[in-house]
Image 1: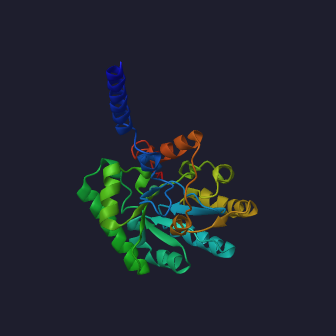
Image 2 (image 1 turned 90 degrees about the horizontal axis):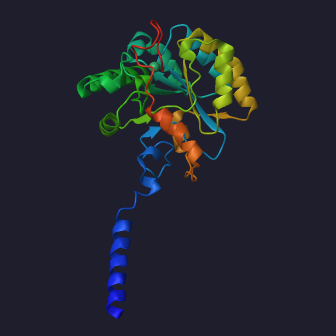
Image 3 (image 1 turned 45 degrees about the vertical axis):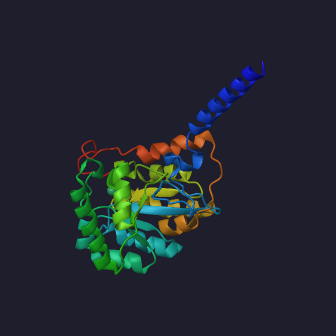
Length: 276
Ligand SMILES: [Zn+2]
């Protein structure tokens, strides 16, 4: 009888050991949690950031535009708001003085590629060339190299994220608020979508190459200020990150969706329009 009990005990121990050994990786190592990383985590990709205050980052892509970006800079200056511009290298080369002004006035400048291709479908060599040319153009215009990348269309593979981070030191910035302003739905729709979706720690995507977006901004900024939001650059938002509380399961799909949705693809975008 004793022998059988011993055997049973050994067997149970063996099973328990195997089972524990096969436990899924702890939640803190779950790769889907790499966004919203706290400062003590090796955060590379961000859709939004967990912060202790009502801080948000407004981001403007695809510029600079000769006419619209200066208008936006005037508005931001009047509100004492710092924003982040993810610029296209070709446009920087054409209007370096506008990028220089934005940087001088305290805005952050990030890399958004040279000519807005889809990184997810390109060779490493071509991606590298897109990034270096733009990095150089930003350095020439502002005297400073960027530390942030927003891939066009949000399209980037996990492997690209790693080597780009290793080689350029960039943090990869996506977004959690998307008013789809590139479809030009009209200023009221752009404003309402931003107001509805923005939370503390949000990264708001829009484009300073569409007149409707610029038209939407005065009332959008007024309303966000009335709600108590405070505006910081993306790097400031990341530096303000606090330890992330346990997330409810309902929260996860939102971030995962934003992280993996690269569309619309360049081919599906209406001609003459640029997404993200
Ligand atoms: Zn874009």
